[in-house]
Image (cartoon, rainbow, N blue to C red; front, side, top):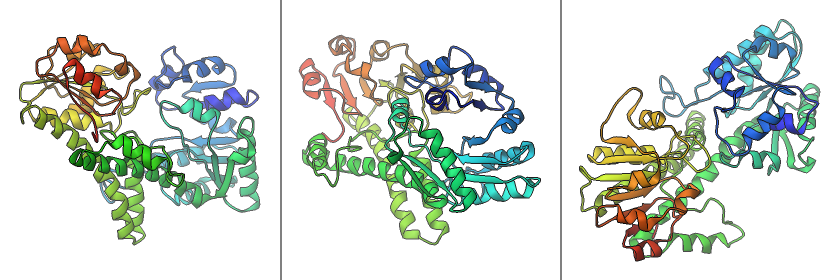
Length: 437
């Protein structure tokens, strides 16, 4: 919405939420989300054509286009628990729109949702519309956290799905015209509703599949003496494969990949395709195994015991340039090390200490063996090993000679993102390990 406000200054954009604290943060100098470049754009347009408020009814009545951007987490209860998307917030928004709408509206699905969700929205709107006409479009988001503003500025594509009816075509064109303020028309793809809804799940599934594939090969590289980065470079030169998403690591995280794959698995099971479901579920299983394999590697290297040993975990966000910790590999690594009675000290430049503790231990739980450091040097002081779990650029610039001097010997370093030069670390005196090396 901030980018639309920036690129289309004549369009009035209202972002509304029932959470007053969140809206207050969007109206403050400290935004609730860290994303490089976002702060500048919000401050440039806020109060002009970009507004944040809790006036949900007023915004619905004033709008021609309503973007639905609520959470669709994985269900933790009942039918489909652990795989299906929890649709309660989507349904709640549909009912709220129907309650307050004062005329025809275009409803745009921005949330990641299962195929055929538009039917649910249309059904609820039709049953409560008081005669108003609604068109429902699918416009899934393909942003990557950490590079979202660049992705929005020059998107690979903008996908808009709608019904192939006269009203649906008009609605599609209306949304096309919004993006056409800055996106070349040949990058705006229009499809039917169901193709658009499914494309988001499939895109994330394919990207995650590539990560799990190269991570599976990283284990084979370690067993055989091959170097996974060299293998990735060799296969990535094949134009049919390409180099992207072939970076071996401790595992993928974030709000989308696992959730969307499990949603895809549930859909396949629901439509009687168990073989397809099993195929995609294996992508998640491989990712989980990679996280536990990394922690196990630390234990084995430290003479099969980390009990009472200090392990510095550098990085907690699921990737650099974000403060998002959802499904972060660091959570699994920290839990596994704590289960082995290690003393775990975490440092991340953007994730608050309270959030780190809550993610690892659970809300309001305490564990004296888990602490949070103010910087990487504090975390590493007196440590037996360092585990790099997030690829923050600052970890490449640390003074590792200084860090080595302050650690117990032998000093170990485990690079879970393959961002460091292991040869140089070995020359300093570290026993250095990477992924797939």
